[in-house]
Length: 171
Image (cartoon, rainbow, N blue to C red; front, side, top):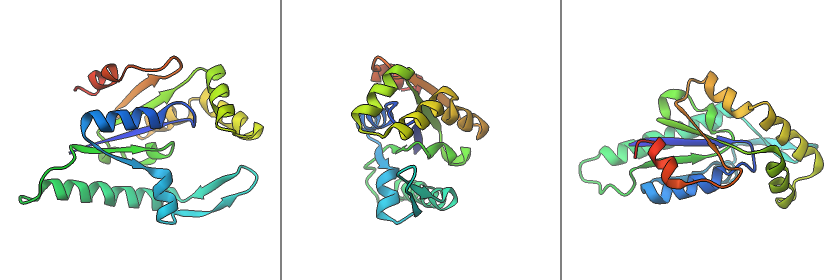
């Protein structure tokens, strides 16, 4: 069973790619934001940045257990194979250790387009500036490289072709 993580700066198209891939590949789609809320993995709230404070170690422990549970279910002899794998959607997913992810898709976007997208999402000026700086400095990509993930970069500025993404995944 494969695990694909999809990461990138907020607004770069992670969720759209992750959901389309999950549907085409018959993978389970895991939205980490929902996991953080549902399982109370946030340590608090940063009022200034208007974001949750997440303990990456706790999040990774949860994700690793979820991946192991999926693999165990698919290996069990009497179980019907419902999913072919799992797709984890989050700008934090690249923190997952390399041995738990077969591929790491990093979404990228032109700065002008990203600015428009973040404004449409009603991000405040400081949050827009912070996310644009994150994109300029390729933070998610560089952190994924440090974790030695098998990386596929997807530029979503003008959309993307899901068939092209599937080819890059070997499918």
